[in-house]
Amino acid sequence: MKRTYLLLALYSSVFIIFGFVFIYSAGISMEARHPGVTASEFLERQLIAFAIGLAGAVIIIYMKGSWHFKRAFTVYYPLTLILLVAVLFFPDRGGSNRWIEIGSFSLQISEFSKISLLIVLARYFGGLKKRNLVTTFLIPLGILAPIAMLVFIEPDLSTTGILVAITLVMMIIGGIKLRYIALALIFVVILVLVLYSGGFIEDYQIQRITSFLSSITGEEHEQVSYSLMAISSGGLTGKGLGMGLVKYYLPVSYSDFIFAVIGEELGLLGLLLLMFAYVGFIRELIVAGLKGSTALEGKLYIVGFALYVMIQATINIAVNLGLFPPTGVTLPFVSAGGSSIMSLMIGYGLVFSILIESNEEREREDEEA
Image (cartoon, rainbow, N blue to C red):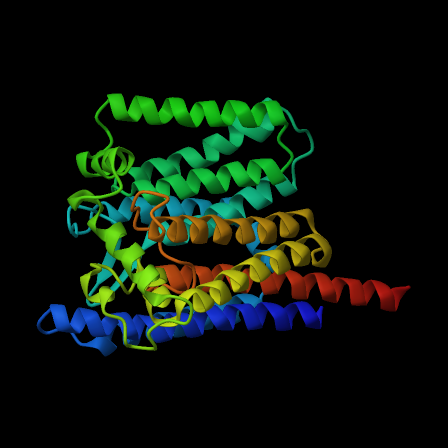
C-alpha cells in the first residue's frame, strides 16, 4: 500500500508542477496582450486555490470514507442541487450563470457537482441488491437528471456532457447489462436531438460543432490552428521554458490550451512525460480501487474518479490536437481554474480516505485473527 501512496503522490506531483510552471509561462503571454494583467496573478490564484483544495483534501483524509458515503443522499445530493439553483440567481458572467461570487472569491459549483455525483452514484450502486433495467438504468438517470438539467441551463454544455459520461461510466462499473448500455447511448442521442430541435442548445454551441465538422481551417478554427502550430513548432525537445511564441495568439493559453503551451516549450518529450503520468496515475488508481478498498462503494468511487480524470484529460488533449471541437474543458490538475483544482483535490483526498480506512480495517481483522 505504501508503494501505491508513493506512486500516486509522484504522478500527482508531476501534474501540479507542470501546472504551476506553465500557468505562469502562459501568463506571460496574457500580460503582453492585456493591459493591467500581470503574469503572476494567474499563478497566484492557482496557488491559493490549490492550498484551499489541499486543506480540504487533508481534512477529508482524516475523516472516514464511509462517513461521506453515508451522507451521499442526505447531504451531498441535496446540497449540490441547492447550490446549483443558487448559482442561477447570481450575476451572469459572459452570458452564463456558473459562479457563486462573494467579493473577489468565486466558486463554479458545476465542478464540485462532478465529485458529488461520483459519491452519490458509488453509494447507490454499492448498496444495490438487484440489477435490472430500473435499478441500473432508470434510477441512475433519475439521479443525474436534476443535476444535469441545472448545469445545462447555466448554460454549460461541456460539463453537462461530462456529468452524463460519469453516469454512464458508473452504470458500466456498477453492473449494468450490455443491452442496457446500448439503450443508454440511444437515449443520450435522442435527448441531444430533442434539445437541438427545441432550440435549447445555444447558437455558439452549435457553431462550435458545425464549424469543426465542416473544416479544420479558417477563422472558426483559429484556436485549434494555433494550438497545432504551437505543438508542431516545439519539435522533440521544445523551445525552452518561457520561450514559446505561438502561445501569444492562444486566447486561453493558461487553461483550455495549456497542453499546447507545454508542447511548444518542452516539445514532444514533455508531452509524452505528461501523458505517461496520466496513464500511470489512472492505472494506479484503478488497481488501488479494486485491491485496496474493502467496501464496494469505495471501489466504485475510486475507479469512477480515475475514469473521470481520464475522460476529462482525453477531451482536453483531443481539443488541443484538433480531434475534438473546443469545449472549455480543463486539463485535470494542470490547467488554471480555482474550482477545478479545488474539486479535484477534494475528490482525490476521498480516494486516500477510502484506502486508509480499508487498510485499517484489514489490520484490525489481522489482529483479531
